Image (cartoon, rainbow, N blue to C red; front, side, top):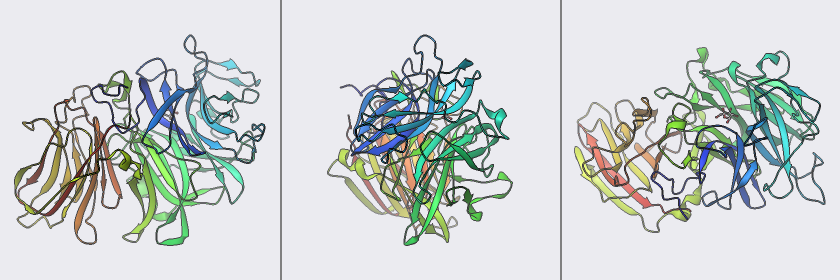
Amino acid sequence: LGYTEPYRPQYHFSPKENWMNDPSGLLYHSGTYHLFFQYNPGGSAWGNMSWGHATSRDLIHWDERPVALLARGYPDTVTEMYFTGSAVADVNNTSGFGVDGKVPLVAMYTSMYPVAQDLPSGKHVRAEQQSQSIAYSLDEGETWTTYDAENPVIHNPPSPYEDEFINFRDPFVFWHDDTQKWISVTVVAAIHKILIFSSDNLKEWSFISEFGPYNAVGGVWECANLFQMPVEGDPSTKKWVLVLGLNPGGPPGTVGSGTQYFIGDFDGTTFKADSDNVYPDNKSANWMDFGPDFYAAASYNGLPDGEVIQIAWMNNWQYGALIPTSPWRSAMSVPRHLSLKTVNEKVTLLQQPQQSWRTVADHKAAKHSWKSVSEGTTSLDSPGKAFKIDLSFADHDSDDSLASTFAIAVRASSDFKQETLMGYNFTSKEMFVDRQHSGDVSFDKTFASLYHAPLSASADKRINLQVFVDWSSVEVLGGQGEVSLTAQIFPEESATEAQLVSTDGATHDVRLQITGMSSSH
Ligand code: FRU
């Protein structure tokens, strides 16, 4: 069945061939998880943007379906591309698209018009204009009909942002139960603003509020999404979370794109970030992931109230088109289950892997524990190329004789000249991923780097790391999931070794579990 090419992700979604970017239109409906994605049907670089489609019953075994929205005019002269958006199940048939009692699935996306034109709806669009359009499906997302009678349903950015018509995109639509309205969250990318619209029928939209700029404002703002979650242990408190991408302008120490979030409240009209989530002078931000390869994070519609699962594009606009994979380019992150919990008196966003990874995990994990791992390297049995690591060890102050850093090296050659290190720096109190010697780093001069994320010890003074390793990626979740660090790597096929590395001294009370992961194909 294939999926065995060098670097081919074994349990992360990647398209069989061609270019992919943002997850778009994540929708759970009738027992099926839909994943649509930005897709070029004609090659492995960005272009001809269409919506690819894959379905899954468990978010780990994916079935790639025919292209859902094929760029209009492809392959000869593309007159409309389908950029990032979202999808809902219109169960009350507010749109009227449903027939014979069938629930219409409605997608809202950005129409990008490469050339000026008069549309069937009578609307005129300018060259490179971005507008918001809708399409519907009456066969569970297999085929789609664009609403040509009225598209685009949001033609131009509202006043005073009319001039931003080439940078107005990425509608994220959801049903707001309290006001019984559809809400759509869009970006005016270049001026770092979110514009919010509401509608009764998904066809007619009113501009109701705006948000931003706040916190990180490097590059452009893209791919916003907004959702509500309870605060763990405090069921009466529900908060709203706004997630958005920046390109470039990701977390400190990264180059290219990245993802930030705000926790606050949304009353059906306005999103207001909590005061402790807004940092003066745009000097700081809440980073969703501190690594280089986590972008355009999108959340599922159609899940039970308060349940949030996100998937992100595991790549970076800095070098996305140069990564050495063929015949496809890009994979998605492992689906992540989000929650909110008060940590150190602040409501904090936590990420945990969605549990279906267990269906491809080996039944028996290799477990080890050490009272003390001495300075230097400690060999481990070869774990191969795809596995999950649970690593935990005692924290300590930096002024004693213990280690300054402790790490696990994976995807290493037998001489460890090639390796990817994931670990903790006891002095700076940061977890890190070091991909400087991770394999092929030649395609971009910024790729060979070390990334870090602040992480404090747990209440019982331990550092807990959970890592997903696949044929071309590592994802590290720290603590209870309050920090994450995602990075692609391109090691040699033969790089299957691992070892522990304790620098400048010993590391105490180490527990390690390695679980092999098999292919989901
Ligand atoms: C983000 C993005 C979106 C846009 C899409 C086009 O990665 O630039 O803003 O809709 O990609 O493919």
